[in-house]
Amino acid sequence: MIVLNFLKKKIVLLLLAVFIWVIPVNSFAFSIGAGGFVPGLPFGGLVIFTLPCTCSANLWIWFAPLAPLPLPPTGPLIYQPGYTTLYGDFAIGIPTTWHLGSYTPIVGNGVCWIETAVACVPLPNLGLMNKVGTGLP
Amino acid sequence: MHNYKKFLFLGLIFPLLFSLELFAFELQLVSAEEGVKIFNKDLKIGDNNEDVRFLQKFLNKNPATKISSSGTGSSGNETAYFGQLTKNAVIKFQEMYASDVLQPFGLKLGTGFVGAATRLKLNSLLEADNKSSSKSVAAHNSSLPKYSSKSSQSSQNLSKSASSEAKKASVIKNSSSSSLSSKNSTIVRAYSTSEYQVSPGKTVILEGEGFTPKSNTIHLGENNSIPDLGASENGTKITFIVPKDLLLGKYSIWVTNGNGTSKSGAIKIYIVVTDSPAERPVVEKVEPVEATIDSEIVVSGKGFTTSRNNIYSMFGNVMNLNSSDGKTIKFKVSSMQQIAKMNTEKSAKNMPIEVWFYVANDNGYNKEPASFIIKL
Image (cartoon, rainbow over all chains, first blue to last red; front, side):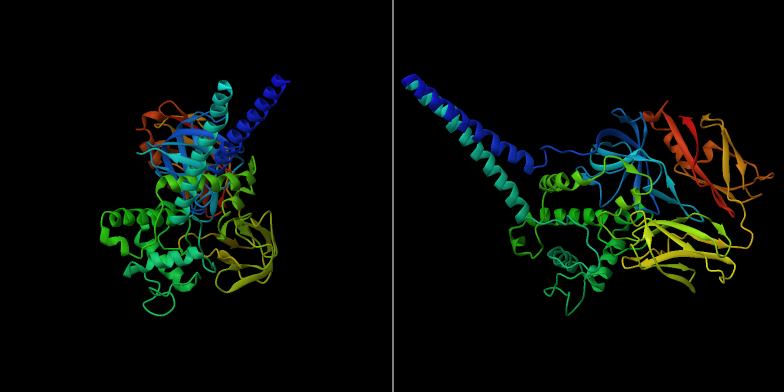
């Protein structure tokens, strides 16, 4: 009977400990955005060229190299002011800086529109950056 | 019993202390975000919130960007309303820092819209101002609003993105992508028409963004307008009929609606109204498929004009090309200015780069981009 009581106390304490550990740690992780849902696909790459999309007011940024799969080893992604969340060091699209973030793939053309003499035309690209952090040039 | 106390300490007290530590850290983060202030959302005319007051206070610090010298909006009389005076001050600010705010987007004139680039500049100035004021005790009396450091800004952005990004689609499809670009704004932009040369009475689709579900007005030049048009595909397309009584000619085309106007001094799109529309350029073949920087590209197709064919690509434009037969155009890869620049980038060596381009001339432009591959 003494052993049983001791085990009961132990189980209650264990549950309490787990509760105290799990709830704050999880809520903390959630509060800084690290928990659960991180949408988009990851990407990382070195910028070699940036084109301002004159009609749509965003940036078409060419990376070489670019990773990981299913991305090709080189190609363009779109940085959209007001949509893409930008983190330090804020050197967006500057050649020779490394970028790391997440993107949403784009099927077809669109998002980046450049000017011709008669109309704006869309430039193909691999996707729209959801968020991106950069290195320094 | 001794083991029981040990267990109590390790199993309960230690985690409790640890969680309190975490909780304190969370509180620190929250208070850091509450105590400091940055511009973390877009602002535009018509907005009414405390961020606007904060913006006005900031702009009033510099005589060159003052909202007003006296009365409403002047220093000490800031309001939460983003009106024309605030817009004018924002324009002045944007033009003052044009190289950071406007030029990256090919703009020369301020827009009055406080978007990401403008906010980035405002926040960097706030940060610089705070750094200089923190060095001086006397500067504590400064009325300049506080700012957040990059780290607190990042944590703020992280938590913001966690909720907002969950709403994003996993794949963005062609036409709806344009509406995504206007997620945080209501800027009206007109990009292109389904036909460049068109006869009166024909149906045309105008593509752009920021169109309202109804009450859009299409303007064809200064003197012609078609009111009360609805938009489809998430505000990216307007279908209209070219008036039968419209005089033949070349018209600049733009849209006005409740969100504003797409009319821009810098970017203009056109439509040509004619009784005999010419065939727009069509690219059928590009050779070689794989090129080097020394290659000559031969573009075969139709709808090319004998002169003034222009190539528009992401790596530079090649202008005034001739086509004696109207079926072929030739140009050197090296004539694309940015390609030559990229040739010096070591990380681009031996990488297959697809160069997309359009052919534009008096007949219009090819609907789908043509391309060739280049290995630097």
